[in-house]
Amino acid sequence: MQQIKLSERLKQIQFLANTFRLDSGLTVIHQHLPATPVVVVDVWVKAGASVEPQEWSGMAHFLEHMIFKGSSRVATGEFDWVIENSGGMANAATSHDYAHFFLTTSASYLTDTLPYLADIVLNASIPQEEFLCERDVVLEEIRSSYDDPDWLAFQALCQSLYQRHPYRRSILGEEEFLLQHTPEQMRCFHRTHYQPENMTVVLVGGIEQEIALSLVNQTFAEFSVRSECPPHQIEAELPLTSIRRHELQMPRIEQARLLMGWIGPGAERLEDGIGLDVLSIILAGGRCSRLVRELREEKQLVLDICSDFSLQRDSSLFTISAWLEPQYLKTVETIICDRLAELQTTPITEVELARAQRLLGNNYIFSTETPGQLAGIYGYYNTIATAEQSLVYPLTLNRLQPKDFQRLANQYLSPERYAVTVLKPL
Image 1 (tube, rainbow, N blue to C red):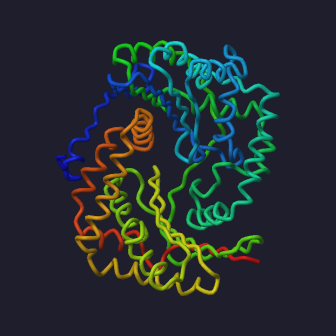
Image 2 (cartoon, helix red, strand yellow):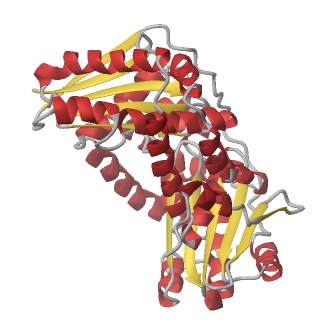
Image 3 (cartoon, rainbow, N blue to C red):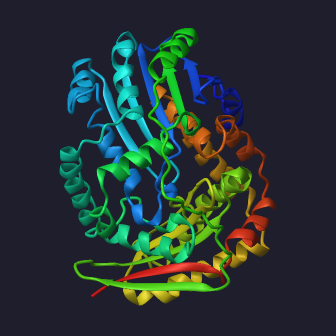
């Protein structure tokens, strides 16, 4: 068997999709995979929680639910019946930066199913009765989240880190505001943001380019009459100047939680973001990482510890999370800060960098194996930045050198300026 080095494998991955801008302003991304009989359509909209007016908190996520309730031409339940009857699958998701709706179907059924997806996304009717019923579903989702201590701790951390930006809000919204929402407000939100210049339609799979473009032109032609939501303003977040500390106590939890967070670069500084991805692996990505080895394996001060970097459009989030006994909270936080200080003064080793590059490179490769994964990558990057940047990740990952991480640690991971949320048992 011939062995292919990771660096060579990364070079083989290329951005094979073609991007088009239609006259309406709609962006279409297409990649033909002739070997597969499946087509994935992923519709991305720049209409996440960050564009909600404060008093309309939770509207973007609630609308995601209501999209599937149909349009004036698609009855409630009809979309689900058509997709399931053709052997397809459909779903959706909402974040702060986007909402997206995806369909997986046999290529032979695409002309039958895509018109239904397009119509409910572009022309959602948001009927009053269904609105009230689905609101109860969303309210239950919010109430269920209150039983998740890790969700509560993370939300508290975001509120400490982001004092101005909508990233501080829960994507699910708040009960108080949700109960005040009306179908007409939601229709206004939909007509404001679900417009062609805010949307990207990605098609990946067994469909040729000419047919794909023709089908999108036909089905994504009738957009709702434009409206305008109440004004909302996204303020730039001020840099942290101290440690912001928040403590919660909860019943029925056995271990304490320690969450530490730092604000990172936005999508426009993707190279820095990739570097922070590497640092998250070096710090607490697996058994060989620094914090896992020291705090869990050697000193046994934590039950588990991990680190994560989440790329977002305006500013990203770097977190370190630990599960531990309450008496070790102060000790563990001090050790973490000491290790961050070491990153600022001492270059990481070649061995550490090679391991992180290998893990992240493999993750990237594994994320490009299916039509659904490819469609998700193209749509995500085109929504928060540009689709072409999906190719930048592996190339930048291989280019980073140990000295680069001292700058990143000094710029973004201060042991003296961060937010920390502590969750303790009652």
